[in-house]
Length: 568
Image (tube, rainbow, N blue to C red; front, side, top):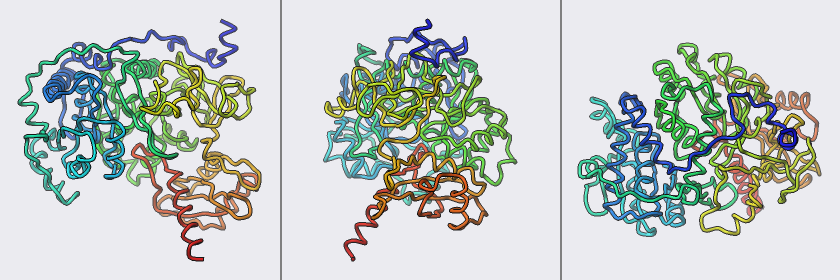
C-alpha cells in the first residue's frame, strides 16, 4: 500500500466513505433508467416549468420513442442527433436512442447551419430530434447530409395547461415564428409518434466496454470539432465516480438543479446520468436567466447544484439575490473553467453549502479531478484524481513524468477515458499514448498529490521571452472589488511577439478606468505579467455551459490586425 501511495500521494487524503477502487457495472447505459423506474417508479424524475414526470413515466415514454425509432429503420450503431435544450424530450430522447441500439450525437441548439451541416456530415447521423423552432435550420442542411428522418418537438409539448396554450404566442414574439410541420413522410411530430408507437422494442445486444454510446463533439477551438467516442462503460464509470464523490447524497432523496446543458458532456454526466442512476429529481432549466434560477431555487429547494463559475458569478451579482432563500443548496462542483477563490467563498457564505472546483474534459466523460466536498481542499487547485483515475505531470507531448512541483502537461488514465476520435486515427494517436490521455493543459502537482492548472498549453502567452499563464493574471483581476468577469489573452505585438490583453466586465454601477486598473495590477503581479491593453465590455463570449471563449477574442484580434495591415 505504501508503494501505491508513493505513486499516488492523493490516496492518503481519501476519506473512508470514498473507495479508492470502485466496482463498475458493465451494463448498457440505458439500463440505469429501467432500474430506476423499478426502484423509484412513482418518484418525480423531472420538473419542467410546472410539469412533473415520474421515473415510470420517463421510462415508458423512452420505450415509446425507442420503438418508433426502430420502426423507422434505426439499426445498431446508427447515429441519432439530439438538438434540444434541457427539457423532458432531451432526457427521454437520449435514453430512447440507446434503447433502440443507436449512438447519441449531442448537438448544440445554438449551432448555425454551417456548424450543423459539418457535424451531421462528420457523424453520418441518420436521424435528428430537434426543437420546432430549429426545424427550418435542419431542413436547410438536410439534403447535404445523411439525415433520413427529422423528429420535431416543442417546449409546449410538456407544458401544463394553460402554459401550453399561451406558449405559441410567446414563441412568436421571441423567435418571430411558430413552426408546426405536418406529421408524415420523413418528418415526425413527437406527440404523434408517441401515439402511434407500440412501445415494443427489439432487444439489442450491447457490449458496454467496446460499443460506443455517444459521439460528443469537442468545442473546436483548435480547428474543426472532433467526435469523441465514449462507450457505455466510460459513461457508467464516470457516473459512479461522481456518486462516490458525493457520498452524502442520498439515492432517491436529492433534488438537482439541471441548468448545465445536457448537450454538453458535463451536464450530461454530472447532472442527467447521475440523477437517473441514483433517483434524483431534476429541475430542468432550458435557458439560464439568473432571476428565474433564483426563483426556482427558492421554490424547488435543490440540494445539489453543479455549475460553472460564470453561473455562480451571475447569481451572486443579481440585484435581488437577498430576496430569495438559497439555503437548500448543500453541494456544488464547479467545472468548465477556473473557479475564482472570491466566488467560491462568497457563494458558500450566501448558501451555507459547499462549492468546490473540479476538472475534466470531453475526452474523459468528463471528470478526472475534484477537490473533496466535505474534506480537505486547497483553493486554486483542481483537487485530486477521482477513484481509479491516475494522473501525472508529463513532459510536453510525451508521457515521461516531471518532478513534483514542476510545470508540464497534465495526463490522465482511467476507465472514463475515451475510445478515441471518430474517424480520426492520427488525432487519436496524438493524444492517447499507452493508455494515457494528454489533456493539453499545463499544470503541476504538489507533494500532497493536489493538482493545479496553470493554463491551456495553446493559451500560454510568450511575451518578451517570458511564459505568462492567463489564469494567473485573471486570478489577480478577480480579486478586484469592481470586476465581475475577466479573461486574459495574448495578442500580437511587434516588439514582444505577444502582449497581454485583459477583457473586463465590471459589476453593475462600478466605475473603473484603465489607469486605475493598471496601477492595481502593478501592485499585485510581476511587471512582465501586467496587461498592456485593457478592454471594458458589457459581456464576454461564452459557450453554452458558461465557459468564456478566450479563442474567440484572440480570433477577433487577428482579424483586426489583418484588416489594419490591408488598409495600411
